[in-house]
Length: 128
Image 1 (spheres, rainbow, N blue to C red):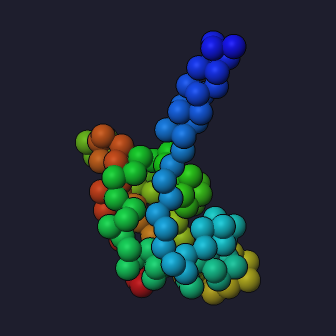
Image 2 (spheres, rainbow, N blue to C red):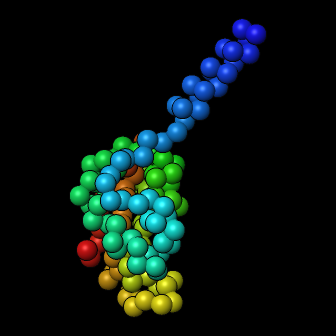
């Protein structure tokens, strides 16, 4: 009985330590953000200002934790010295059929840079 109880306690501790602490930001609906792939539904443009205003709460997360928070990135780039950049399109993406399309330099997108130690270190929104 003791072995079963201690195994359950150990399992609970492991499960709680593996979960990502999602930043609690009033007005930011993470589900709407994730479901609005490439910003085609127009939800991300309504939510991006919450991320900008609270950008410090999104720092120091790993790439996997950021995927848990904001969903799989729409695009990613490997940069010099082991850095990675995630892109989340907010508006004007060419994968959207119903909205206005602009070229890559004119699109609104959230950029998250990760350092060589896999920590998010900078958030920036292009053309916002």
